[in-house]
Every structure is written in structure tokens, then in C-alpha cells.
Image (cartoon, rainbow, N blue to C red):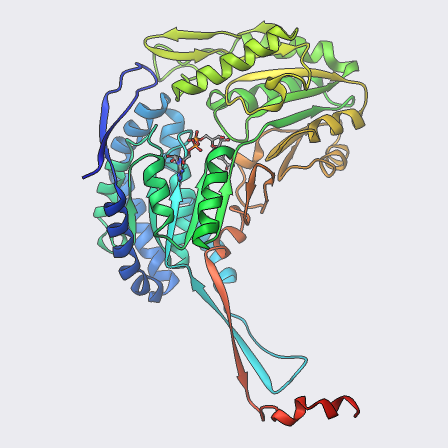
Length: 477
Ligand code: NAD
């Protein structure tokens, strides 16, 4: 029997949801069942698997209200909760577009030895473990589960213990598609459940913090299985001398403040050419002050509550450190309590340096520290002065100039004259640099290809070489 756990509602502060964490034995039994069911799933045609997944999308439509209510109760926001639930159909359409090319098994004749022909077989990993974080609980659980299922793997999802409510309605939707229920399981729980899962799967997709990502990577190395790690970031925005300061400020604000900054691709530090510093900061502060909290009505406003209590402590500590070292707050800057929830208004800081934690550590809040730079080179150097390398943004007079600078940034996704485009476009392949992740691209066709091992079948159509062909005497001839 699993341990009893509780989840907190970020709007009320109440621990109003109880659930059971799956224990070692439950994880082992669930993964064993997935392992038994997987070969039949892989033997279906990919079209047949898509047909099952389309029925799953229909089942999710039937449970849309309960799913959105559950995600909303855990995240304190409505529109994004709804879009998480609605993310399945566009994702399936994308994987359907990629599937023919990715799943095509090549056959060819060897150029080196023409009598040998070979076939490339794609063998899906039997059981994939997905371990997801709290910031987009449903979306980041299905983002890897769907392509794994398309590939013919079975999947166990371990949602974050901070935002577990969607698991119940999602399990009901899965149960309505019996073929899927055999190969897709949810295992609620915390880090202990996640650690247990790693021992019973063949590949892990992990989204979360660097600290946990390291532990997961180490555990996967011990288990000798691949780990795809999607971790944190400290995304920079570079505003070049040729940029329009008002437009750049508007977009930096959006890309920093959306989801209350609780997105891996949120912009978290800004480098502005000194010639634009004053107008840029002026526009940013003016616009930031106008962004309303989504309080008290969840259906109004923009900035939702902080989802995870402990994140409020991290944000407060980083702000305190910055202020103690001489930074100036122009707006926001406080953790506010409303209705039992914890809130932060869009916050603009200047007088910041890389000696401050707010410029080097992930904040995960709507905080925009802005630094003036004397040149493009200085902006590039400071942007690259980070342990992270998730994504970045460049604002320039032309996209060509922005691209030239973007090519010099050490990050996996760079938005030019916009911000956080990795959250809007999932077609381009990208790798995380440095501590922001490890493993292949989750996006684009590679996001499907990573669930297969490639096997080669060599066919000798002529005469195999005799052992004498390898005799030392052959060297003379
Ligand atoms: P976290 O690392 O605290 O937890 C992530 C998951 O790991 C949870 O399900 C947790 O229960 C589980 N876990 C904890 N210990 C474990 C262990 N020892 N073994 C296995 N599983 C374990 O992350 P979080 O706080 O939930 O999420 C926020 C972080 O996620 C931020 O750093 C953010 O940048 C990152 N993130 C990255 C991306 C991306 O695509 N790169 C996307 C979203 C979020």
C-alpha cells in the first residue's frame, strides 16, 4: 500500500487533495504488465496505433472539463490548463506527419562489398518511464508519452507530487480505450516513486530541475539505460542598439511574465545596449505595472499564483540578495499573499551584476533584471556566461542581424525579434546546452526517432569470405 500524500491548491493555500504514492511493489507490478503488453502494441501498424491514440483524444474531449479543472486546481490558472488538455490533437497531428519518414526502414546494398545487402530495423524500447514536473503537469507528461506510444513503446508516467490531480481524470480517459490502457499507466508519487520507476524501465524521459536531473542521469547510468533530460534555464534576452526599444520591452515582458515566469523558456535576464537602456527600461516598467494579477477571479487577469510554495522562498531570497548587493527594484519585488496564495507582480530590476544570484540562478518567477552593455560583444559574452544553455532571445533592427548574433549564443533555441518561440513551434530540432539537458532533441522528427534502437540485418547474397582471406600471407599480395 502506497504512502498517503497531499497536494496544495496554489490559490487557497489549502492542502485539499489526498492521493496515494505508488510504492516499489506497485511500480514493479505496473512495469511488468506494461512489458507483457508492449510486443502486441509494437506489432500493430503505426496507423493502428494512431487510431487508438485518436480514440484517446476523443476520450480526453469527453473528460475535458474534469481534466482542465484538475490542472487548474493544481496550477491556479484556467486558460493554460485548458490549452494543456487541448495539446493532444495538435501533437498527434505532428507525430503523424513525421511518422512515415522516421519509421521507414531503409534497405540498401553495400557500396564496399556489393554482395552484402542490409536492412535497418527499428526496435522500440519496451517500457519508457516519463517523470514530469509541476509547471505544466499534463502537457509535460504527455509530451514524451505520445511519441513513445506512436513508436510502439509502452509508457509509465510519474507526475509531479506538487500537481498530481490530473492523474485521476486522465486515468478515466485512458480506461475508456482498453488497448491503450494496456500500454499507458500513471504512477502518482514523489521522488521515491520516480527513483523506483527508473529501476523497471528501459529508457527515461525526465523534465525537471538540474539537481534532480543529475540524480536521474546517475541512476539511469547505473541501470545502463538512456536518459533524456530536459532541465532548467536562465534564458537571456539581448536587445541590440538597432532594436526598437518599445517592441523589445513588450515582448520581453510577455516572454518573462507568462505563466508567472514558471516556464523553462521564460526570459530571466536582459542585456540592453546602453544607448537604449533608458527608453527600454522606461517602457518595460510602464508596461509591467499594467499587467494585472489573475485575482480574485481565475477567469480574469494574467499573472497567476506561484504554484510551488518553496519557489516563493527561492524568488524572495534571490531578490533579497540582489537588493543587498545594490540592485534597484522599479516595480513588483514583493511576495504578496492573497486568499491563501502567494503572488509576485512583474518585477523590473536594474543595477544588477553577475555577482548576484538573480543573474545566474534559475528564478522561475516574473522577474526581469536588466543590465546595460557597451557593445554587442559584451552582450554575447554575458549571455554565454551561464551554467545553463536552454534558450535565448535577440532583438535587432533586422532578422539578419539578429540571426548573426543568435549564432554566437550557446543555447539550444534562439528566438529572433520575439521571445520563447520554443513554446510555440515544436517542429525545429534542438538540443539543450550545458546543464539545461542531455540526450537527443524532444522536438521535430528526432523526438520520435529517439524511442527506437536501430538494428542492422546484413544479408550475404554471394560467397562468404573464406578464412584464408585473413591469413597473414595476404599482406604480401
Ligand atoms: P524537480 O526536479 O523537483 O521534479 C521533477 C520530477 O522529478 C518530479 O516528478 C519529482 O517527483 C521527480 N523526482 C524527484 N526526485 C527524484 C528522484 N530521485 N528520482 C526520480 N524522480 C525524482 O522539478 P520541478 O521543480 O517539478 O520542475 C521545475 C523545473 O523543471 C525547473 O527547473 C524547470 O526549468 C524545469 N523544466 C524544464 C523544461 C524543459 O523542457 N527543459 C520544461 C519544464 C520545466
